[in-house]
Picture 1 (cartoon, rainbow, N blue to C red):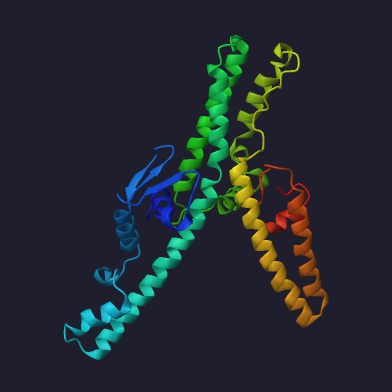
Picture 2: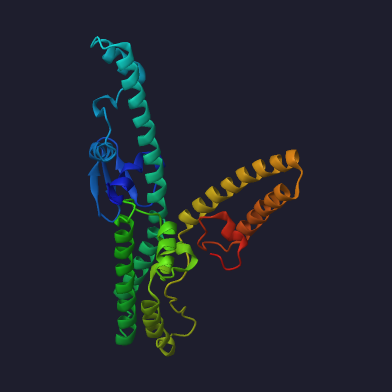
Length: 300
């Protein structure tokens, strides 16, 4: 089974610009912004093909026409040629589906990191500020930074962790599994702060609450674990969700026009209401993975 780092690197070409992934096409190497992995594209393909137990890996890089010519040149029976072409075609389709699944699985973990990395940089900047001389203030920010770094490490470990079915899960799938074990992750784990333990949150919040007396006039008090995402990520996520909802609405409205029943009408109205709610979400507030959560008060 392939680790999530490998799967994330594999998706670099297909998914376009990403906050965490950069692909140098000339060298075929993929680098993470946090320098947590370096893999080659060919290694990725070889590992994926090996994990799938592909029957004819030597033919996977050829088109079906090229494969036909190669097999015909070996004077193989037509039935054998047809069988090999069928197997190779099936394996290519399976490999393509796995790449798409891996891309989606990796993307859902990746979106947790940009706002977390941004918060880590802000806290580091506060600690480096020369005017930050209060021992109590430095202790609070240091404790908060330690929690942030541990959370980033935990998220990366969870993304790589394999479960009983032998597959790494998306954050949403993992939230459901943890719920079955009695461990609650709020808001379906759509923001990095949802993955911080209540104990760590309480400790940091208590440390920052003691700083209120030291606050300068008109100075903004730092709010730990603020549920905000980055502007670029928020706009991209909103555009993708809105595009998906508009597509669903067209289908639902057409279906109701044909069926003209209460069920199809209710579904179309639900989607329209979700679009309204999406446009009312405060700027940079984390957005849900499932559009139905837009209809639930406090669902995200």
